[in-house]
Length: 82
Image 1 (tube, rainbow, N blue to C red):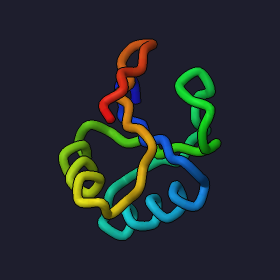
Image 2: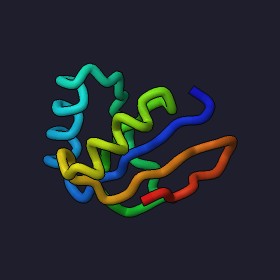
Image 3: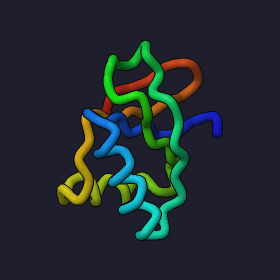
Image 4: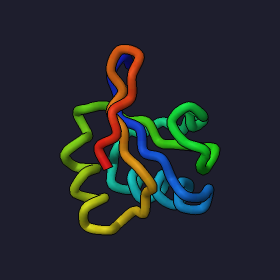
């Protein structure tokens, strides 16, 4: 996945709980280490494709999962969206 979205969390509990909620909704996500040059935060993040952006954004906006930040990665840079 060249371009993708990355959800960063305040703590590991929120990351694990969010992964479960998203997978229960049928969303394909990948757990990955949080790049330290983005943030000194929870050590794991959730990576997902742009195909799932609208669904995941609605889940975030509805407060179903608790995140710290949301990023879009293209080429070699991260753009913070939330």
